[in-house]
Image 1: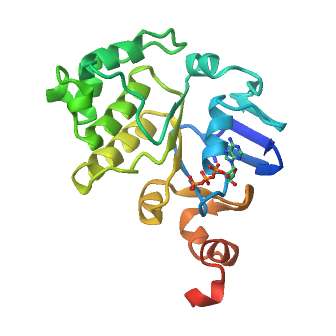
Image 2: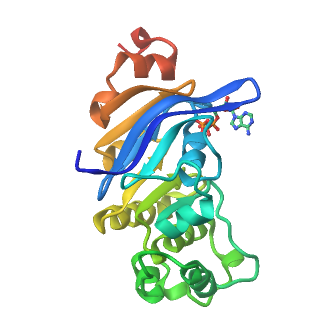
Image 3: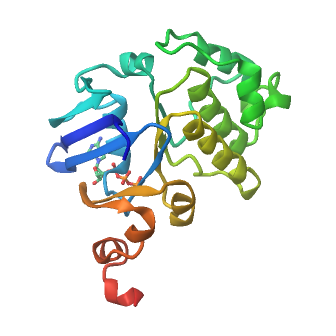
Length: 240
Ligand SMILES: Nc1ncnc2c1ncn2[C@@H]1O[C@H](COP(=O)(O)OP(=O)(O)OP(=O)(O)O)[C@@H](O)[C@H]1O
C-alpha cells in the first residue's frame, strides 16, 4: 500500500454493554477504494461513524496524514477533507440540486472547491441542476449525495452503503462516481453488502465480524477465506 492517508489503530467502541468495534486497525490510501464488508451487525457503520468523527472511540487512535484527529469534531474533520455519506441522503426539502451543491461547496475547506457544473456533469446530474431534490429519483438523490462530497474536494471519502436503495438504472453511475473520486486521488472506504460490487471496485478489503477485523488483504482472497465464509454463512464447509 502507498503511504496511508487515514489510519485507525486499535480503535474500539463500546455502547452500554455492546462492543460494536473491537480493536480495529486499518488504513486507507490515496487513490484507492478499500472495501469494508461483513455480516449484519459486524460494526461497519460504527467504523464509518468513528472515522468521520460522528462518534468518539472508547480506545484507540485515528490519524489523518499522521496528525491525530481522534478527538477532532466531525465538522473540523470535514474541513480537513474527511467527508462521509449516510445510508440515506441528507438533503433539504425544497432545495434544488444546484443549491445543495452550492451549500456543500460553501463550507470552508482546506483544499478549496470544485466547479459545481463540472461535478454535476461527472455525476450524471448535469441536466438536473434546477430540479428540486425531493422530486429526484432516489438513485439521483444518492448521486447528489456523492457529488456534494466531491464538490468540496474530499481527501478521504467514507461511503456507507452508497448503492442501498439505488435501482439498476443508476448503479453504473454510482460506480462511475466512486471511480471518479478514487481516480482523482481520494482515499475511499466503501461499506457495501454486495460482494460483486466490492470486488469490482476495491482491490483490498477489510472484513469485520462481531466488531473485529477477521481479514485484511486482496478482496478476491477474502471471498475464499475460511474465516470470512464462516462469518457470512455459519460454516465454510457449506460453501465447498
Ligand atoms: N448507538 C448504538 N447503541 C447501541 N448499540 C449499537 C449502536 N450502534 C450500533 N450498535 C450495535 O453495534 C453493533 C454494530 O453495529 P453496526 O451498525 O456498526 O453494524 P453494521 O456492520 O453496519 O451492520 P449492518 O450491515 O446491518 O448495517 C451491532 O450489534 C449494533 O446493534
